[in-house]
Every structure is written in structure tokens, then in C-alpha cells.
Image (cartoon, rainbow, N blue to C red):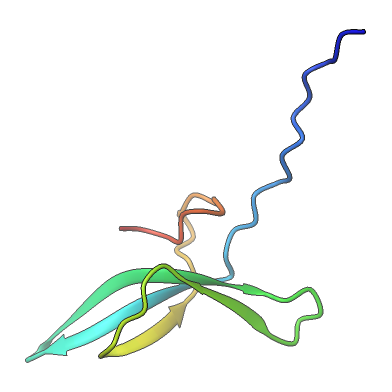
Length: 78
């Protein structure tokens, strides 16, 4: 019996927030994307996934831009 090809992939889950590593050098701030955060199903917390772990500066969570593509693996712009 032949199997029909069906798309079994679940829909992509875009992050609720993007995680940015911010460092200050003089009057300039440098923002580098380091990860993303997703709200828990119960709405009482977030899962933070970092692609790198900065040792200095700060991590800022921001809403994704309105025109950003919604993909699970991409946490925003480069």
C-alpha cells in the first residue's frame, strides 16, 4: 500500500520577544541578537533560549518588529 505524502510539521512558533546583548562603548550602544523568548502556555512565565551567553553588558528583551518573518529558528534580524 502506497503512503501519501503529508506535511507532518507543526506550525512555526514565532517568539514573543527577541533577546539582544547590549554593550556600551562611549556614547554608542551596540545591539547583537543572542536569542528569543516564548511565553508559557499558562501565561505565567517565559522560556528564554540563548544562542550565546554574553559575559558582559546586558540582555534586553524586545518585541519583534512588525515586519519580521515569523520563523521558529530565526530570532529576528542579524
